[in-house]
Length: 307
Ligand code: MG
Ligand code: MG
Ligand code: MG
Image 1: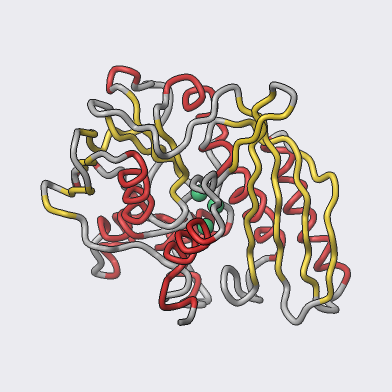
Image 2: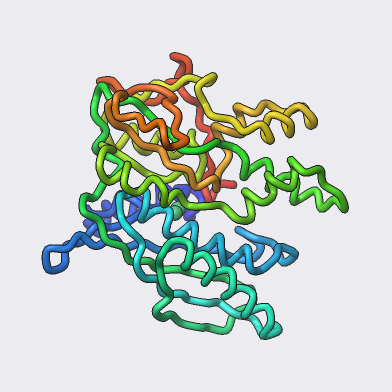
């Protein structure tokens, strides 16, 4: 049997069962050290798979940090420290400098710091970031409650639209297209939600593989039924314009588009905060599965070893 026969999530289930890794389940691990709740996570970006050689390299640095701290924030933690493992071909030093410029700018933005790492010679450029954060309360994906509202931050699907535009490698882009490309290249992890998540959310995770994929994990781990409604999905006006211009369904982008790094969380509907750009997209009830407009959600998600 090959890894691709299991898929990314099948592989994780296989390893958990075979080696009794019962704690594995969220995108960060929560461990207790001297009464502190410490969150640990890692994330990888590889040239050719997650970014292409023609991308501005400083945005790759920015995105690597954002993707890594996003998981810590989603689980209610403040990101504190980062280690950077660099897979490095013999490139111009300037390129490495630009990569680190992107990373250090992001670190400043999130209030975190690179404190070490490792360099290894490789055929292709790659980055693996390990992050440490601290939480007052760990908010994982398995603790949604029946009666909760289902919420997301920001807008969904912009990053996938930006990626498709970027891959067209056109000479000229319209302004709204550049904004979508920017959202793909320089996503912002939602550190502005940290207090809200840490205080009120029953369950939370970031949306990195696409809402359709990530919400299935939350529903399954929480052992509850999630009902969401298509017309409640928050779409940006840029995505509307993109969909109109290219004859696409913007809701398909919102459901299956990955790498938005928005948050998916649940709490009682009355905890909605009007000062944050959150939208209630549905509710949680007893039962199982994810339903969109009362129909079961097809498998939309992005699974690394199968696509
Ligand atoms: Mg992952
Ligand atoms: Mg992640
Ligand atoms: Mg995640």
